[in-house]
Image (cartoon, rainbow, N blue to C red):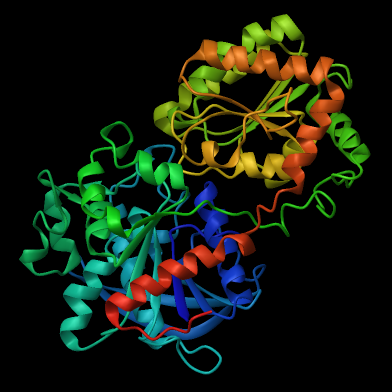
Length: 499
């Protein structure tokens, strides 16, 4: 099939979390299955085109929006069989993807409308080897920034006879982020008035970009089977559960994979030593190096607990901050936390700094993000902490298991699908899980995990090895996406080959 992946984030060009990783890894996996793949994402100001080996395609398209013609230039990077097209517009040249230290950008509706239109124009106009990918194409869309593309397809392009057989699949990575904007910005989209209605963009008097995408995409996916069930209920539907129940027959839960080439403890350039499930000796060296780098006492006698991710209420940060002081006093464990918060949750950064000040020999709070440090934390930690309030999929627990770091997670969404609770008596499980969103439940689970690490080390090492030997790669996931692509193609009469 001809597939165009459209996303506001695409590693290695842009990333705030798992969305960028997923979209960056899916394309090469699809190419390995014989598909032709193009990605379209913004060229943000921080993207070094020369360092990325980008070439100017020479194509500039004018996109009508908000009373202006917006020129978008396309840069091309060819990697792993995928043609990455970076849409270059002045609105993307800011210090941040969705916002900065002052908050969310107020014109995000317009920025990502331009991205959606740019993706449609790229399919038609940007010459690649053998010509543009063309109109007989499946658009794989990701989250609310791409929710307008099916509307533009139906409202602006098909009336002109363009893209008559193009199909769309929308993947929901985080239902809590919905792209909701004031109704008056509808005029910026160059759409007929009928598209501002409950059957399209109108959402309780506002604009709902994700809601429109959910209604108008041919098929829907989300990033784990449990999350697909949870989001049909009011508790985790974030107001869209009714819309999703309406589309329940077209909603598919597919657990994410990881890029097993980038996340490989046997050949990771970020690590001071390599290791595998058959030889864990290098992991001890990674732990000692991490402790030294972070200014913590270098010792193998206490467990090191890692946490990497956004400092956001979704991630259960308050549970961590409430449970960890007691755990540190009781067990002497060490903790390293890596992450940043948006302006609204800056208090979390302050509280982690306070935790470090209270326990300087036990805690390192790295406020910021470093890809190198993220890899070293995954490799050097004994346990990985991820007590999310909700987690559509999560990737860090998979990275952790790949690196022999045993996850401690709340059993929700993709965490429930990927982490099997340990049963020492049966010799089963890959991590320690709890159900109630409660600091005491987390503390009790951490106490048990630390006890197993201290008192049942052979069993703990077997837990590590079970996680490391599981196939978390995208190659194991892609066939499920292909089945959804075929369903979407059938809706539009788009030709596809059975595999």
